[in-house]
Length: 438
Image (cartoon, rainbow, N blue to C red; front, side):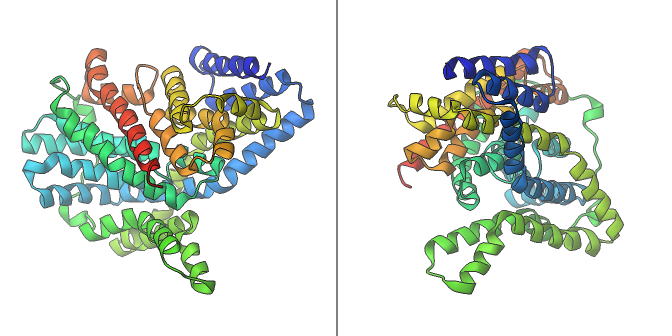
């Protein structure tokens, strides 16, 4: 019976999102109610489970996503993203422009939501392509591959952060493992892949080719831009490495753990950035706070969708569905990492949203993480890889790419979809290889 209930529940989720076009947050709540009732839970207990799931999921994530959104918006509005792009192209030279924009996508993408990073960086790609004479798609795909990988693999992005909370994964280790897996995935799906995909001539519309372009005098320094953008990653990674490889005790251990806590690392970076990218460059405190206010208002729906997924996860646990599925999945000899990746891939293909795919999968495979001894950090990355697979016409990212580059559907499938699928496959392979060493 639980298997029938969860199957009907997932089908109902697809129906509500794809056919009825219902908001994902409302869809998650309705499906949670339906599964709870189908499993015979008492009605008030269902409501309590929903409240518990939302509270447990958002308690930590509100701070992470809020601070991350503020930092990402500041990096964009201050001109730091443009400076990083310009500086890396100068550093690598015109011949290695693809590597430069790929690295830009990774650095900027660490703290910037995918859609924001896309809108900010793609017009810069247009400018770079015009200046160098290189193919627009051959420059864009490496940068977008890097943006996609950070979106799917690395905290503080919504899905990997939420998955880390649900699986009780160490955020620092998830970040370090994610970077290790991300590097080959980006290289394979960016500069290497562009040599083999069909040649497509992009003809972007003029309205998409213009964005706010800062003069050189208005830009922050390269060192200021890149250090501020990467500071949370540096703090979290260094703290994790010190805690795991140096025999610290007492007060020093507490201080290092405190600084490396993702919330504190982001808070410190926002405070540093407020000065280095704001006050020190002539912005008023009110001006910086307006940037932060705009940033936070843009993540409201993301937080609600994550909250809805958290409520569904709690219903699956409290109704006994998760335990049943966990016992069922343990019968197979397939790696839990591959199971998580497959389920995320199927949901991604059906629903389109990478975030929804990742969070829905988490509720289904949670018992595997708790009972099989699989690394929760690697499970986060495996599901993240699956959630990027097979992007097509039901994915907003597909249409964003198609419209900005003025391609037809066939051309978008042969470039964007192939690139996203390459990331998903190479990401899983990277996770399975890393699993042999940790």
